[in-house]
Structures are given as C-alpha cells and as structure tokens.
Length: 331
Ligand code: NDP
Image (cartoon, rainbow, N blue to C red; front, side, top):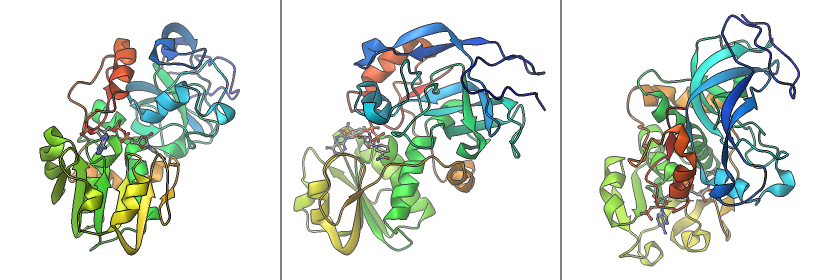
C-alpha cells in the first residue's frame, strides 16, 4: 500500500512502489469554445490523490455530449475553474490509493464516471489525461470479459440509463419507447429495459441505417424517424425515455399514469428531467450482466480514436450522428 499525498492542488509526489511521474500528457483548454480550444499539454501535473481517492493510469476514455456543452461554457456558473482537463468517463489501472480507500488496491482494473455531479463542480482534472484521481465510491472493478475501450464507454451513459429507468419506476412487464435508441445512452436503455428489467415491449427510434442495430440490442419495434412520426402512431407506452430532446412530443405517447424521462431540452407534464449522479455501486450491480454478455457495450465503429485525435473525436461526436460511444483508446 502506498504513502499518499493528501493535498488536493499540489502536484503529486512519486513516493510509491508504483512508478508515477510528476507530470503527464493531458488535453486541456484555457477558454470556452468549440473543439479548437483543446490543446494537448505535455506537462500537466499528475493530480494529487485525496484520502478517499485512487489514482488511475487511464487506459481508455470516452466522450459525452456534456463534455462539449461544458466546453462551450453552458455551465460556466457551476463549473470548476479553467484551465480544464475535460472527460468524465475512463477505464484504467489503479496506481495509487488514498489512506481511507478500503476495497481497491494497486493493480486493480477499474472503470467509472469520475465526477459525482456532472454540472456542479465537475473535476478540473478529468479523464482525457494519462492519470486521473477519482473517489473510490465512483468506480467499480472492470468486468473481465470486456476490454478497456469497451468499458470506458459505459459509465456515464449506463448510469444515466439506469437512473432514468429507476426514476421512471420501470419494472418487469412494462413497455417503453426509447427516443434516440442508437446513441450512447439509448443503446443502453434498450438493453437494460429488456435484459435487466424484463420489459414486455421495447420500441426505439433511429434513422434508416441504424434500425438493425436497435433490433440486435433487443428492441421489438424499430421506428425509422425519417419515415414515421412516433407521436402520430397509435401505440402508447408505460414509459417514454427521451435521449433526443423531444419532450413535448414524448408526452403524447405515454399511457395515463406513465412516466416520461427527458435528458435534454424542453419538458412538458408529466415529463421530468434529471441530471445523472455518478455511482460506482450501479456499475457493480450491472457488472454480472456485462460479464455474461447480456448487456453489451456499443463502441462507435469510427473509433476507438487514438489519444492524439481527441479533437477529431469531439468533432465527430458533435455531428450528433454517433452510434453508441465515441471512445478514446489507447490513452
Ligand atoms: P449521442 O451523441 O450518443 O446521440 C447520438 C444519437 O442520437 C445518434 O445515434 C442519432 O441517431 C440519434 N438521434 C439524433 N437525432 C435523433 C432523432 N430525431 N430521433 C432519434 N434518434 C436521433 O448522445 P447521448 O446518447 O450520449 O446523449 C443524448 C442526450 O442526452 C444529449 O443531449 C446529452 O447531453 C444528454 N444527456 C443528459 C444526461 C443527463 O443526466 N440529463 C446524461 C447523458 C446524456 P441517427 O444518426 O439515426 O439520427
């Protein structure tokens, strides 16, 4: 077990058996703006490890739309100070543990979403870096059957899918319509609804080339939004999960007494919006399904992007056309 530096803002000191350097490569920005503000910095201080944290050598990271919205300055009022090393999702190896860490040790392969709250005080030093410091409670052991790149794409999206289904009171025998079934969150909502919760019926929307994917993930009905308007169709659902920003249409197809979960954009009653809270115990709970291959990570086939191509990867994510997760690997 390592001796750990407690200060949170001073550079980490390499005091341990595991060889941790004082500086690292990381993507960072000093001002808000489009993807061009991102610069690869070769000498960022390796974050110090708090007593409840582990330091992870990041093997793979993943991008989320919230990284882009944050970088554009949408959450300025509650953001951490600039400069920012972005990134919420990661998978990697524990190289140092804080004095209060109980269940993890050096060498453990972990994955997680590193900021408990994405919008309120997210970490200044995120996952698009060689090392990142994260609270033990926000990570879980990586399922052995998936690799780092696959694992890195899961945390924020699967925690969002899970929290949305829980808040909607989803349970066995209920039906669900997933708006945006082919995206990072949608691919996981379909699978959790079907494989973990035991949905009676899963319907999902996407454009024509992605309908087969929806079916392969467990959707009973794949609706092509370029040809049909879901809100004009007769079927009603117990839950509608909106990962697109169609809250006002979504409420038209929910059954009386049902729930409409909205991740972005306007909401109309009875719809509600929430912001995901990171929780490693959710990952641990879902690990058996991942381990058994009942829930599968979907990594966008244009990736994984190498660490040198984070700007290209963000530009691609920001087209809004990604299939599953945009992953950065190796880091
Ligand atoms: P992605 O970038 O992964 O979503 C891309 C997908 O959206 C594509 O596959 C695309 O499919 C699909 N899509 C776009 N327009 C439509 C449409 N009109 N109908 C159906 N599908 C469509 O995003 P995420 O899944 O990661 O996130 C979705 C949204 O949720 C984002 O706005 C994100 O910020 C938000 N979010 C909010 C969270 C919260 O806590 N509130 C947490 C996580 C995400 P196609 O190419 O076929 O159009």
